[in-house]
Image (tube, rainbow, N blue to C red; front, side):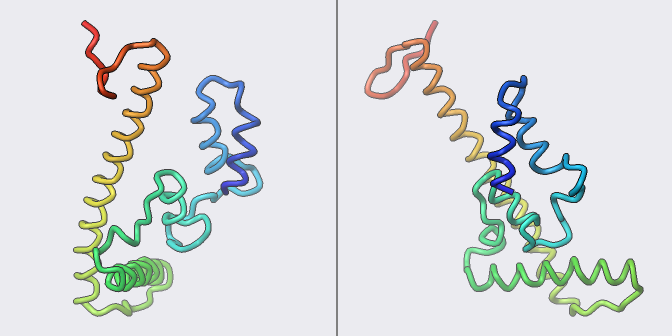
Length: 152
């Protein structure tokens, strides 16, 4: 997917909003490969884990628990939960997870959500700081000890 993204960066560089075009054509628009992102297969090369890592440099497994072993266990449970749901809906199979495992992963999903939101806010803040620094340099706005002076 990264290789395709690099190709698209060059293909769409002259278009307005080229960053959006690059990502769109990397993830969604290919007549031969319609399902670029696979949300039901978490570990697939086109799965959620890889997309989040590619876009935001976030390893979502680490967001499930601070303990790496527990986080890995919860990740496997999440994969089983998605597979169970698929098998129940499409084949009428019974659930394979125990109720306490289902409760554990549902609680972890809430923690995952909170951690990802926190990381995305930090990511956005860092990007804003980079853009601000570029603008300060572009317009030659003086700074004191590395801290920009407000322009009134």
